[in-house]
Image (cartoon, rainbow, N blue to C red; front, side, top):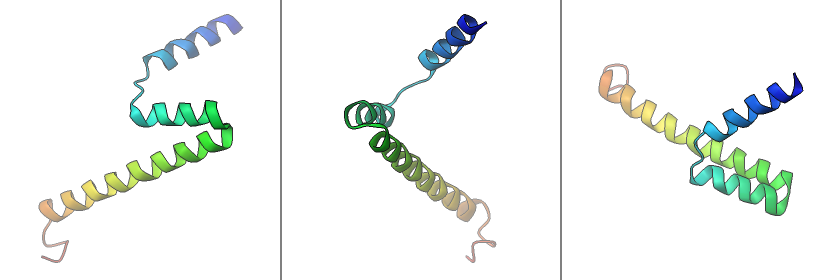
Length: 70
């Protein structure tokens, strides 16, 4: 059973797309330790969340101008 679980996890990890931010997290984690990798991942997540909020605000303004105060 342990072999099956390990192979499933390996398959999922290989199927996951790794972009530039994922590479930065991996490089910092391997080169400078877990804490630096974790903080890099936290920063990447925060940046992605802010971008998402920006798109959501833009959508809300264009789709519902009366709610946005226009």
